[in-house]
Image 1: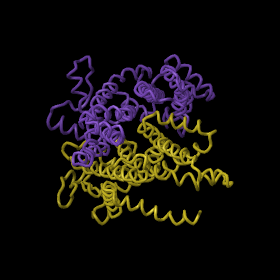
Image 2: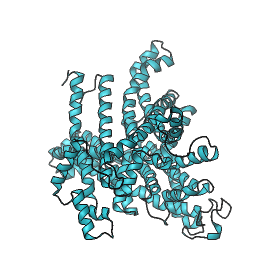
Image 3: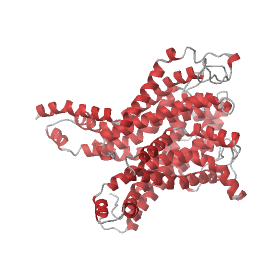
Image 4: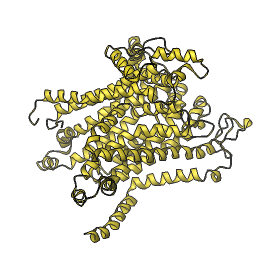
Length: 289
Length: 319
């Protein structure tokens, strides 16, 4: 009955969008994230100063009309640094979420579909998960050197196992459903079954997980920068602004306070978005009455 | 397996963890070889002469075939020999055991703070679902999982140690020097470490409790005239415990991961500080040894949680 299915699909999709649009915490998270992204994109308009420009005579000035977030130990505008830092921090979060989502989905679906590979793949994921994610990230990032790319690679490695597990769990449920059986009987190959039938139906839990990975990645990037193996200075990221401001934290609290608030807001926004997506897309875990 | 005794199930679960333990050991070993570049060159430094590099390679056994190295390493491992630190002038085992009490104290104290508070907050939020109490508690829990711990740690040091002068700003006092000094040296780091976990546990407890509160037997209990508090205490809370035990296991693992970060800010000489210093200084034997320790701890925690499961819920079986 392909006609019936086709006519139902768009309506169901709109229903999901409408439920998300009515979800309070999803909206709050969306609004915060939108504001941060706009801040990052419009950084040159919102702050006239260059985030790297040093003004030695204006070192360690507190918040004022000219510098709403104050200046740092090199006389750089903290507001400009936080706004431009958003670009790097959010990019790392997005890239990590996308990459670990893609690899995690691939591993999870392959493990669910090919039972021969399942044991090996999933035991490898178990073993990787045995190490604290932040420790894996520190190790890989330190090994690859202080670059934005290595931070993304490190965080991706750290978050793939959890994503793979979640996708495998839902793929195991989906693969037993009748329409997959029907596709198999109709002669569809493994690749087609995975891509057309199983994967699209694991998207809900995957999206939920990916939005939480985004949140963790922003926190973890900040942590790596703080330890000194994040994206290298002088280009600002939220983590390395806090790290640089640490030694001045007592007298010039504004250097580390504002980027820290930015990290918290971004993580909070992604957590709220994730909660909303989970309520709407993942009925098993729905709790809101 | 349907009617197997609890003991048999526990043994079965232990056997299941063997391949993971072996893989953990293999990963910790391979770490050295997965990294780009020649470990001997990295350890000896960029400016080192070919002779010095060859000496390092010989000293670490890197000139041997990989499989031979692995067997040698596993052989030493079985005898409790994790090798020598390249920088600390002591064996990896003694470096680890020296610092273990710090991390163990920090983790234990955090766990003691997290579990009652997280369960209480989550339970209260569930019981007052949809009211301002629920919203407030969940907002606080969300903040707990969103604020970066190292940033909070710096703010805590400024507030309690520098400005108010109530607590020491950094460093660790062993338990042997007295309970009070030990506690004051750990209270701030443990609190910072707990906030994320309290938020996490409160969120888990709330959703577990809400699932239970919707169950038929709760309606029955209310219908037969049991008061709301007794219903929650006698029926709902007990059945909430099972997912909460899982959450506690996850929390213990997260605490160990989180302690790595918190130890840096508070300058606590624990395993976390050891491993980060070792990674930054390319002290590979220490990195391998501590990774192994973290991995084993994780596997052990998971086995323990599953065993507790079996004792709490007789329906649980391992397939």
